[in-house]
Amino acid sequence: MYKLNEKVNRKNTSSLKWDGMQPAFGSNELLPMWVADMDFSPPTPVIDAIKERVDHGVFGYTIANGKTAEAIIQWTAKRHGWEIQPEWILYSPGVVPSIGMAIQAFTDVGDKVLLQSPVYTPFFNMITNNMREVVNSPLKLVDGHYEIDFADFEEKLKSGVKLFLLCSPHNPGGRVWRKQELIKIAELCKQYGVKIAADEIHADVIFAPHTHLPLASIDPSYMDFVATFMAPSKTFNLAGLQASFMVVPNKELRKKLMAIQQMQGLTSLNTFGMIAMEAAYSHGEQWLEDCIAYIQENIDLIKKEIAHSLPDLEVMIPEGSYLVWIDCRKTGLNDEELREALLKKAKLAVNFGHSYGKGGEGFIRINPACHRSIVEEGLERLKIAFGN
Ligand SMILES: Cc1ncc(COP(=O)(O)O)c(C=O)c1O
Image: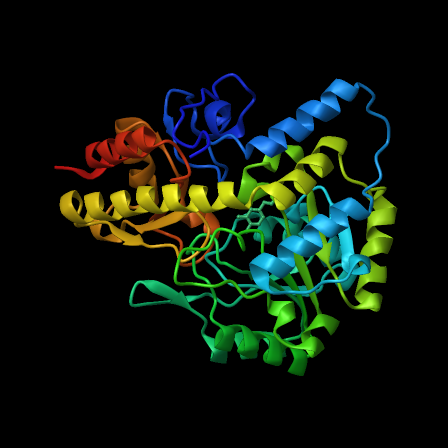
C-alpha cells in the first residue's frame, strides 16, 4: 500500500497543520487533527517527477503546455465522466484564489453573493474581503445529514443575488449532492440569472456507493453560467504546491475570469505544482484508491468507537471528502467550553464548528487522513475531553 501506513514526521517542516497550532490555538503540543491536508506522502510517481525536475537544475518561467491539459482532460473524463475541452481550462494557484477571482469577475462591489452554511470558512471571507455582501441560505439538518431548503434558497436568489458559491461535495458535512438536488440548484440559478462558482475540490475522494457529478456536466445549458474549480491538492495531498484549475466552458465567463487573472498577473502555474499535477493525474489513480480505502477504515473506526464510548457525540459519516463532522451539542458544552475541553484538557486540535457559520455551532470537524495510530490517539483524547 505505497507508504500510507508509514508514519512521516511533519514537525518542523513549516506544516500549517503541525507547526501552525501555536498561532491558532496557543500551543504546538496538541495532536493535530484539524487542517484539511493528509499526513501521507503523495504517489511515488509524483515525487519521482519532482525529483527529476529538481535534478534538471534550472527553474525559469514555466508554461503549462498541452501535457498538463491532457492529464486534466483524461482525469475528469475517467473519474467524473466529463469531457472537457483544453480551451475551457484556466490555471490558478488555488481554489480559494479562484473563488476570489470569480467574485471579482462576476459581481461588483456591494453585490450579493449566496452561500449555504455551515460551509468552508473562506467562502465567507472571500465575499467580505472583496467587499460584497454575504447572503446565506442555511442547510437543514435532516436525519443526520444536510439538505437544501429550496424554498429559502429560491427566496434568497430572488433577492438580487449575483453569484452562488456551491460546495460540492460539501465541506464540512461530506455530503455528495444527488443529481436531483444539483439539477434543482442549477435550474433555479438559471431561472434567476445567477451564476455559479462550483467548488469541487473534494470531488475525487468519494466513498462507495456515492458518485460525484460535476454540476456543469449535467446539462449543456449549465455550462453557460457555471465555472467549476478543481485541483489535485486534496486528492493527492499537494496543497503546498499551489496548483489548481478552473473549467469555464462559456467564452464570456472565461473572458471575464481571464481579465481578472491578467489584472493580478496570475496566469501561470508554479513549475513544481504543474509537474506534480501532471504526474498525479497520469499515474496516481491506484494510490488514490488505496488512500480512500485507508481513510474509510479510519472513519469506520471513529464511527464505531464514538458510538461505543461517547454516546453524546453524533458522527456525520462523509459520503465524500475526508472530513468528519461531529455533532457535540448533546454534551451541553458551549463553544468556549468545547474549546477548553478539546484544546486544554485533551490537547487535541480540531476545527470548531462556529467558524463555518450558522448551523455549525456545537459541532467540531476532525481530519482522519492520517496514520491509524493518530486516529486511535485522537479517539482517546476525545474520551478525555468528553468522558466522565
Ligand atoms: C471546499 C474547499 N475549497 C477550497 C479549499 C482550499 O483550496 P486551495 O488550497 O486550493 O485554495 C478547501 C480546503 O480545505 C476546501 O475544503
